Length: 126
Image 1 (cartoon, helix red, strand yellow):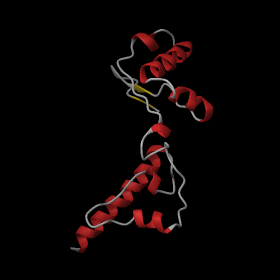
Image 2 (cartoon, one colour; image 1 turned 90 degrees about the horizontal axis):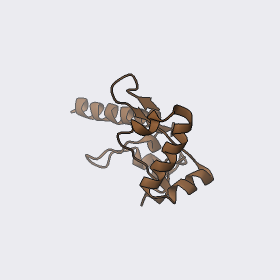
Image 3 (cartoon, rainbow, N blue to C red; image 1 turned 60 degrees about the horizontal axis):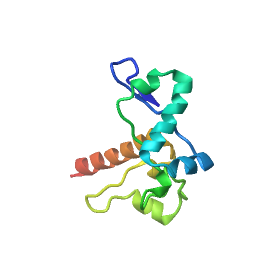
Image 4 (cartoon, rainbow, N blue to C red; image 1 turned 135 degrees about the vertical axis):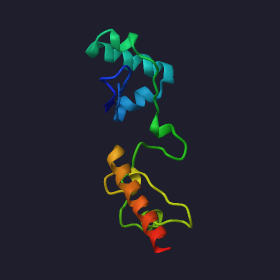
């Protein structure tokens, strides 16, 4: 995904990996991950990829407490999955992991839309 590339500043995802490559990157510090990703990006995009970098962000999903992964494929018929799709009083849960399209923004948008629809129906029911 890239965004704002025609503007003064934009966002470019410079590295996304899985499997053993993800394990190699996750063992590095954030600064080391940036250096490695930028070195690879320079090979494709030239030196401006390095010189015009304003900042960076990286995350090792499997090392994130209580998350332990970037996404999941839950058993969609499990009682726990169905329970999380229901509000707990005034608390609603939403996220790509609560949709049948567990894939980045698309799944998150589907889940949020379902949550907003449920909220709207709750308000209209009075």
